[in-house]
Image 1 (cartoon, helix red, strand yellow):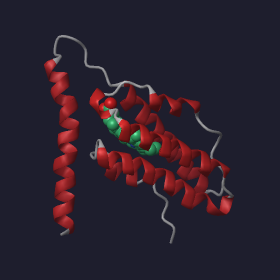
Image 2 (cartoon, rainbow, N blue to C red; image 1 turned 120 degrees about the vertical axis):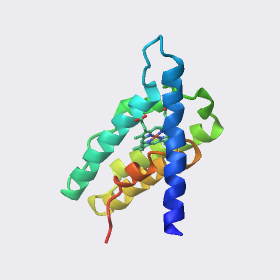
Image 3 (cartoon, rainbow, N blue to C red; image 1 turned 90 degrees about the horizontal axis):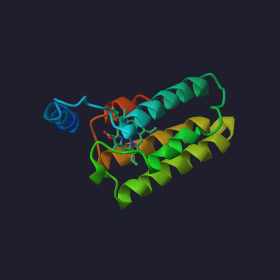
Length: 142
Ligand code: HEC
């Protein structure tokens, strides 16, 4: 059963990244550019990885990174991904990040995981390929 789920993840994950590759092939004559959203996502990934390290050292992450707000305007590889659900998940992500910054050092791990789970919630509806990578940002709580 677990294997079947993993297999599904791999297949669907490939189809998500293939979408980008098809695009790059069909635009052979113009240089393929990474979308603004993909670039922002990689920044968000890097910052949350830093946060994980800080929290594990018992430190607090820095203030709210204002570039995260670009999630409301950055252009997507597939513009049709920006629908009401996407906007809703963006709000939940921003809110949980803000709550995490305000939380006490004791509840920081749980709040960080809540933030990461909000990344995953959106990815389940849009681009499931990076989910295994995003899961690595979770902090084990046992
Ligand atoms: C509101 C929905 C949403 C949220 C929240 C979200 N993502 Fe994404 N993510 C996307 C979409 C859609 C793409 C595809 C972007 C594109 O290709 O234009 C993406 C792409 C990515 C990628 C692949 C980038 C690449 O190399 O092309 C990574 C990694 C990623 N997200 C990580 C994260 C992390 C980490 C978080 C939380 C900190 C997060 N995402 C939150 C929707 C979301």
